[in-house]
Image (cartoon, rainbow, N blue to C red; front, top):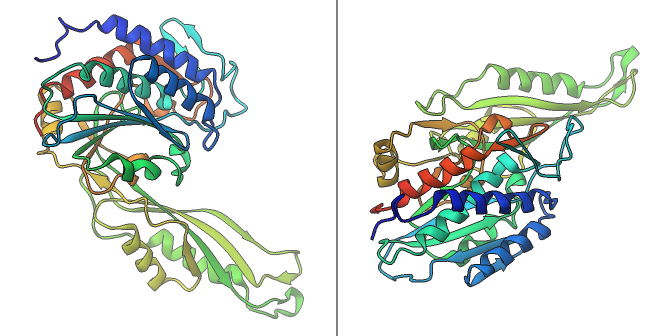
Length: 362
């Protein structure tokens, strides 16, 4: 049995998804503080007659008719949000419908994806001959790549053969994603009196390294993600005008492509600079799925386009199995004042998720 538009009610699914999203918007869920939305999701899934699992602020369910010889597909999106900026002119926690738009914090990033994937799971869960097992996971701490988000429950989910990561991509396929490496640089000099030109100025040491970081280009470029990009985004030094600073601290934001692991990038930087370099984490590597993967080929058959994404997601923490980032909404709306998602985007998201996964053979 295949799921077609003749045997599921897209309008009803959309209404249910929108109503759930409005409840989620009304419950503040900053990273590490997602208890309220976790409870809403737990109760909602339980009301559908499912056995619900939870750990920290992560909530997940498995398809009811799992087969040991079937592959497993993970449907995942996050329910944590960033904090609202001071530029909001609407109440970020008051869901507001206006001309087909649903305003509210987390509506676009990634509430629309979350409720669309959830209702996709509910629909596919009814199919007796899917050919694959399903897991739906609503997770926390995505906005900070936290240890108690998706990374905390992946070991409990068992073997996974494909991950669908819900992030706003206008329902186009992000087949590659840049990684993130943040490095704290520390240049050490020797303090002295500025008037007597004493000491060794740590700022000048840092500037030499910063100039190298500005001028250096990693030779391996990616067709989808371009080159590795490095930017010094913070710098701090000095205590007063007449003291030569003995310490200069700076921060480097690095976006990596799939040609280099974060560890490889770090070692290259370390070899070519004089400052002490300390990575905050090496785990947020770039990711990519083959254009020959069945889910990508199915998407192409449906007329979807593909691209390389410059933004980071929980995809970076899903190692050992292929992942595809795709979801309703527009990336440029994320983390902006008066964030919104179109109701039609949620409707189209559910429809395309269902078409992408129905009769998919892994």
